[in-house]
Length: 436
Image 1 (cartoon, rainbow, N blue to C red):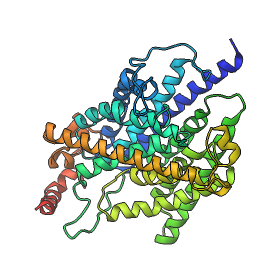
Image 2 (spheres, helix red, strand yellow):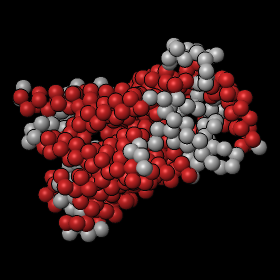
Image 3 (cartoon, one colour):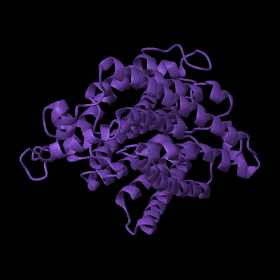
Image 4 (cartoon, helix red, strand yellow):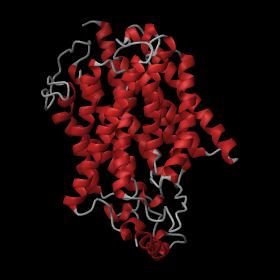
């Protein structure tokens, strides 16, 4: 058996493991960015829903993306079990494992819009429907030979397919679930519901950063030609630029080097370069990361003022940065790199508005579809299930206890100072006055 074939397959399995490990980063990031009373719930539901998504993706998701079908959806390869070599030099099972890890990441991004207020049953039902319908359709359009692929849409590792799709689902969830209790006052002012552990959040971002090399560099699907090293370089530079500019812009604007903004700047840089990492030169990767860091700071403020309660900042990090990253290939893609990936050069290299227009078409069509489908599904779930949000009392106590019957932190028990139960009546009264 050819040594390059073996090395390519080993690299993609390792990349799939790195992408799967990103779930650990999301657990720490999401738990650290929310309150202590929900930490165990966040960790447990993430592991459980990754399991659900894996089974659904095996049964139908992969087939809807890569099966033979039409320009809208694939219609074969269900209940995947192929172990033979594929045309791109990978064993079928290796490619499947890699694609599954991406689908699970998109679902986890979507669940950022559910944080601290959704029932566990809502997570389960939406995981099944998102993994079987919403994500596979978008992925088929771009990666599975669908209609956007026919138009030449460039999305090397998923700024649109993974990040924008997940963010639009998160937006639908935040709109239907409404803000958390205590987030907004009757006069419209905002309360800061601070996360309980910035060390967790920082470690989570670092794990995501490392895992992203599997995400982007793994999308080269091989080690021959060592192009994966170039993609990894662009990934690192964009993330670094996003981190630095986000911290400095927060420092200048607020007088404090805000940690949350810094962390989100790193993630925004990573999200933005995900589409273009194989199409642009390193200097452009730095620019892409810098713009992403600026956008994430101002979009966080925008959504806060718009009273869209997004505890994990999924809309800013994955949505806004995902849009920018997708468009950036239509601006910075070089002729040589675009040709390697069967695309057209960007605006700065004489490509005109053609590729930029295709990128914009992809953003609008995929974003609208993901949001509309998610909103329809969640609205239907709410109508059928009666409610997809926990009761006010359960939300105040925390989802660790109300959904799982135990505390994520054993020391976090009632009758201690500042326990949420002590302030329940005060916050419930405020919440009811807002609804009146």
